[in-house]
Image 1 (tube, rainbow, N blue to C red):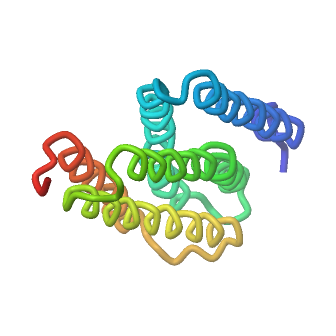
Image 2: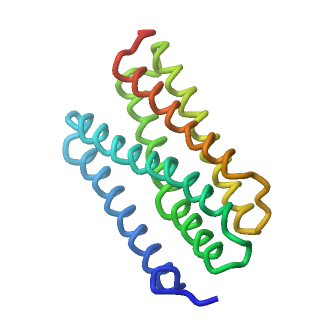
Length: 181
């Protein structure tokens, strides 16, 4: 298998290094915000939480699209091997860190601002749990693709591509409208 400059091991190491640097910068920003003025940190933590959620959602939208295209690739082909690299990097470099930061900052906000109270908040957390389970399902599916053991067709992945969208819509409505306040 020939690897181009984007799928080589060297490119993978560079991607992991860039992701690690970004994660350190992100965590440092959070620490500075909390240290400099904890009383004024709410808006900064909220902004960083939104950035993390957007990054996580981007991965949740893109990964099933990769699966759709991957199902058409012959196992072992250059095309299939490229999709494997893309899927693994997306999960490890973007989705997993973004999900973890989303959870940590989201729970911090739920505790510090709302004291974990409010029906809308409980419903939102429940939907975020479903989003996390979707993430886990996608991650396990990527592992099956990696092992050339995928048994799902493109139609399944087209349907699964809608799950994060529906969950996101419901979560945004709960956060903005707070119908069960």
